[in-house]
Image (cartoon, rainbow, N blue to C red; front, side):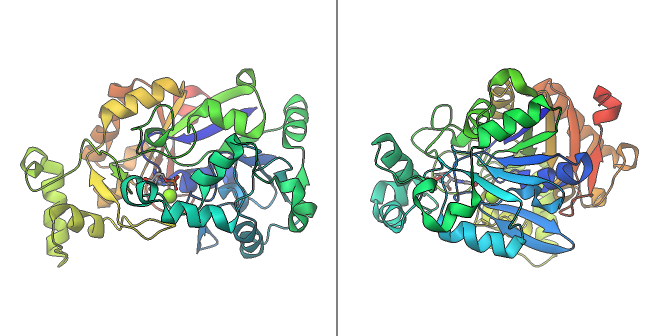
Length: 364
Ligand code: IMP
Ligand code: MG
C-alpha cells in the first residue's frame, strides 16, 4: 500500500510536519524520500526537539520505520552523514546505490552562476549543476563513494518486494508543484519535476502501485527565491483582502512593522527558509495553481497546514467540530474550489496537532 505526499505550491507547504504525523499515525514499514535533493528544508519535531532536515526522510520520527532515499534524489555525502548522526538513524537509513552525488564544485557553480544565483535565486546546494552533470552522464554515483558504502541498497527491489508482501510505504517528496522543471513557473524553477509521478520514479515504483496521492498546501501561499507569486500581498492590494488586513493589524499590535507590508506579514508569520534563512514572500492562497497541481498530481486527498497561523484560535485543535466557524469556512472553500477531499488539517508544528478526517470522509 503506497501513499505519496507532494507539495502543491512552491515548497515549504508544511510537508515535513504532515509526513511526521502520517509516519507516527500510520506506522509505515518504509518511508522513502523522493524529490530533488538537499535543496529541501523540512522542519520536523520529535520529542519536542526541532529538526531542519535536508536529506533524511521526515518519517524518521517513527523509530520502527525503515528509511530509504531513492535514486532520483541527489546526495550530499557530508550533509547526509551529519544528519544520520543528528537523527540517530544509522542502521535503518539506506540509500539507493544509484543516487547522484553532489560535490563541492556543484555548490560553487550553483552560487557563482549569476543567472541561477541572482535570477532564479537557487538554494546554492548544488542540485541544479549536479542534475545537469547527470544529464551529461558524468556525475558520480553513491556506489562510488566509500563513506556511503554501508548505506547502499537497491531501493526499487526492496520497495517492490515490500509492496508485494502487503507492507505500508510512505513516499515523501520535496519542493512543490510550482517549482517543477516541467510544469512550474519556468525558468524560475528547480532542476527536476516535482509531481507525484516523478516521486514514484525517484524511488523506483510504477503508477499502478500507488494508492493515494496527498497534495499538501499551506493555508496561504509563500515563495522564496525568484519567480512570480501571483497572489502576493502588497500595499496596493491589501484592501481587497479583509483577512490579510486583519492579520496585518494583529502584527502591528505585536509591534511588528517592517519596510513593506509583505515583510511585516512574513515576520509575523515567521516565514523564513529552513535552508537559506531567506525571507519568504507571502501570498493569498493561490487557488488556481492549487487546482492545477491537484489535477497534474492526480490528488486523491489534500492536506492543509498552518491553519492556526491564519486563525490563532485554531491552534492545536484536533477535532473538526472544535474549529472556529471562520476556520471551517476557510477549509471548506478550498475543498470546494479544488474538488478533492481535504483529509488532513494541521493546526500546529507538533506532529499530533492535526485534524484527521480520512476515516470520516473516505472510510480509511
Ligand atoms: P534550486 O532547487 O536550489 O535549484 O532552486 C531553484 C528554486 O527553487 C529557487 O527559487 C529556490 O528558492 C526554490 N526551492 C528549491 N527547493 C526549495 C524548497 O525546498 N522550498 C522552497 N523553495 C525551494
Ligand atoms: Mg522547506
